[in-house]
Image (tube, rainbow, N blue to C red; front, side, top):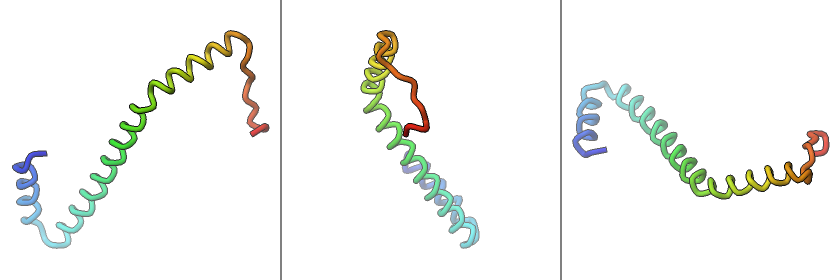
Length: 76
């Protein structure tokens, strides 16, 4: 985000009463925390995607070779 965009948001917030400014700030903090969490998830998924593909291929191969067993939830 450019500093111009941030300045615009700050200018808009200063026109609000203090209670509303606090409410907007809290909302932005929660929103930014959610975005950061999504970015961490995206990074983690991207870093494991090749491993997931490899494991899926192995599972598919084992199924084709008859080496796989159905999962029984009661056995967990």
